Image (cartoon, rainbow, N blue to C red; front, side):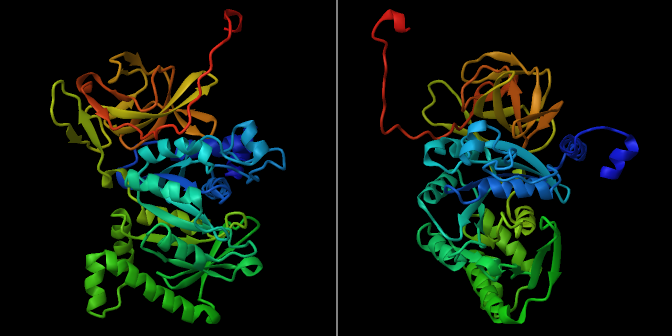
Length: 451
């Protein structure tokens, strides 16, 4: 890539070059099978943004990795607000997209603090899958339970990634037990670590029965090898436990298990995928994002086990006057313009060019210059600019299709509004769940001068 830059004689910054190269990769219409819409959610300081930073680096979206707190004066890409970099926390959810193994993955990095939990709610409303990050030391904590309830509310299947195995006191076994006892999840390892704390060297893939090591300055070189002899007995026991947990939730693998046959690798992967999509099983992966270990296998698991837009059923509500019962219509995920356009505005942001409205397209196609209708207000608006987001950077696109997440400029609307074309103004998407406030405060000026 850098050689091509020299050949072209372009004096572009490396970060801009990588952004443009990803734009070139993402051109064209991806089929549904090669699209994933995922969120990364967790309790405070579990390593969500650090994990996202590593994902961006390994997929070529950024040229260098930076620390969350911005000690080097740069900070993580997804923490674009100055206050986020000063505090080392995520305040607002940030969206980006990557290309991994010829698959487009839209990612929303969400906050962990309870004060900003509505940001998580907005994201999970429009996502098809998620990664639940657990700290290997803290395990399941209070905000983890909140995120689990939100995923359950919107029927979002998820993988669990036990992070920070390099820390003192890390215990993935304890985190797994808490996942089962506190969150009532049918969960099992599909990876186990090779060593812990300072001795953490890699992971063992229980499905493929091989060891995975991460070499190079940034862990970018993935090498596969034999399982170390001291871990063979444990890996065999953990693999059997994995098969039993999946067999309890998947009928096809259950038949293989009852017949005392050993499932093939393909059978086991398909069973894990079916059980994950039905939310009856949670695969558990391990690693350390800060030490650059376990991230690439996590991306592979996203492709293998989380749903694409065609595997998720989305419904629109038919708004009829004097109707006694609510009618719901199943939406089509076909990525063409054969059906009316329908989308949900799930997040609003004050940008440099006015209000930035994040939307998830559920049906049909939207082009720059098209007219769309707000089904709540009935107002007709023209789409003057259509962009895809990479944190606080914008990339103009000409059209988006069902399954895409994008943003619009200059649209006057509220969070939870539905946009459609002229023929579907009687349809609306189910809005975002907003809990009732516990405390409300009102202020009024003492005199007219204070107005």
